[in-house]
Length: 334
Ligand SMILES: Cc1cc2nc3c(=O)[nH]c(=O)nc-3n(C[C@H](O)[C@H](O)[C@H](O)COP(=O)(O)O)c2cc1C
Image 1: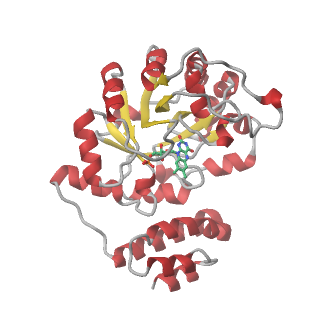
Image 2: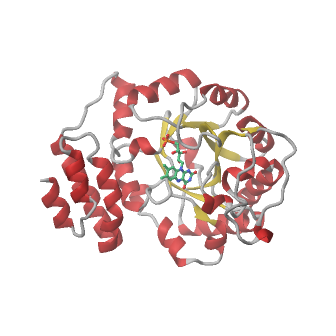
């Protein structure tokens, strides 16, 4: 099986993973509007290897989304090894390991950003995933973490706590990349913010440049890319191979095409409300087809994002967060 990463045209525009957001209808929309590679939301290796049906359903994808990378989290190498085979059998194009997420659901199992404080374990997890199957393996990391993740107050069972003590005050993306440099990792997505600034604040582009110097493989910068202008600025200043876009695509799946247009022609089209309405209906139809009526309830959060900035947005949003049927969506937006 060829490694899809090396077949993609640069700059590569990726839909970055967002738990609870990047479900199959949304991913299909992003692919339709220009994303080159699509990440699923994070899936637990414990759940995957125990045959958890909900997890399988959560990451199920349509062929039109390909190349799809399934993102996994956890902390046990043997489960990463087994997951690699499972994901290969499910038909994914790649596997991504989550080394950047601060969400409690992830760090309580010792996974996500907490792993950056245990570089030896990171190396083992990457190695196990590479050896477990034939899919290309990528990793998603953060700029740095300088204190331990605070899970103690949330975990009732003390025995479940990962007692690993990190010997240094601060671990950076550079440390992690140096540690896994010898392994056959295909791509890195660097969320250029520290653990201490989880989702806000300017991305640390100096860190992206430093990683670029030591990592010859595919490098995607992520964090704070909400416009084609910002996308170009980051591409030009860091020499990365592509970008990971998360919230910039939420309610705006067409941002990928806008970025491509801007890079090619220095200009891009802003969508009219008529065009946005048609995209909302496409998204709602896909949701109904893929997830049934319950999917429409989940669609509500997307609808709220689509209408951001439009005339009468708050009134529209108040109605859209109550929709139950496709007809409701159509009536409200028209
Ligand atoms: C609602 C939400 C869910 C997220 N879920 C994940 C996830 O499942 N895995 C992951 O690696 N990062 C996750 N992230 C982080 C994003 O992938 C991304 O790194 C971060 O939002 C910064 O990019 P942005 O500024 O383009 O949003 C999530 C972010 C948000 C806002």
